Length: 189
Image (cartoon, rainbow, N blue to C red; front, side, top):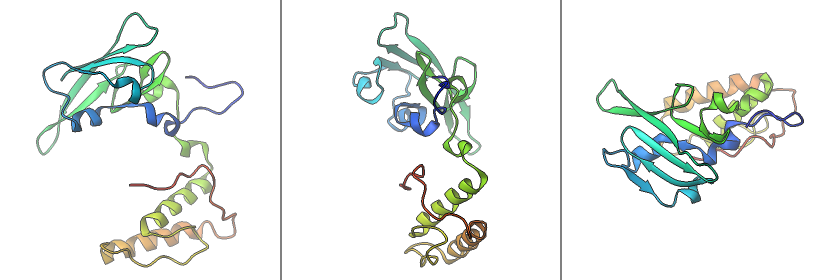
């Protein structure tokens, strides 16, 4: 998945739906010492015929490929106890997510993808931050509306801090085009 000669580069947001995220496997309790085979892998990850994983290894059998892709899983200790799993890409980089590209699953750098915000100008990134803050406060478009009232359950100190940050961001946006761009997805938790 390299850059097209005629189109823009792929973004992490475009590839996020089909990525392999190690935290999903950990939440499901699949990273035990025994090998576990996921039979419905093709529904979640297109192109994967069979996925087998254990505590230190992920084996992907991809459609149309003879040899399976073997991905090592490395564990690091956390400061307050426990351990965190990481996927090891072919470039020996330790990552949490692998994306579909280059005939397998690889890290963001190997697939040559960028974040959506890296394509945008400084003003557009400020707009995105202000939009996300407004969404967190329960509001809508920046600059046009008044700051929404404090959401139920939010601490006053947090609300005041977010309002000050929002006013600082929106002061840079006054006088500019105030239409929500299409590339900003709605915020969902």
